[in-house]
Length: 188
Image (cartoon, rainbow, N blue to C red; front, side, top):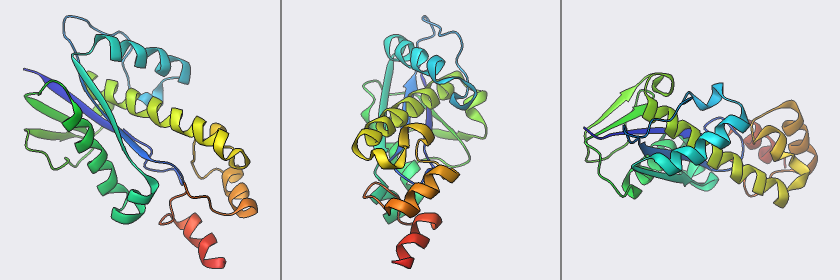
């Protein structure tokens, strides 16, 4: 039975896209060290991401932009990014297992598994791919908008990020529906 693990990264940040990945692992090529991406160092995630891409039967990464997040809300954007990733797979799985408590709207059999990223290897792999892809976007945004320090905080609402937002204002990659950003926009 081919199982596809799916997870997202970037629901909490104030800026950038939300990412999702779908991974079908190859049982003949086990990957040692898979875990919830939040429990791994950036260096370990980066090396595992390369191995996942090399050894998996299939993998795909998709996203929803900050504008889409603002339009349809973060939950729907996360589910849409997951749906996009699943639909991009070159191999059709028998079952899709998603981290969390909601499944995207897909035609394949799907089950949601709370804390799946620490229980199911394929979901762990997906969490690593989603996180490394999102981090890569934030490093690119840091070059584009150096004043916000995206490389440091990855868009999360840290005191530094909030301070830079109040000094420099809202960029086009900030999520306008998120309270700290919305408050700033309403002041102006």
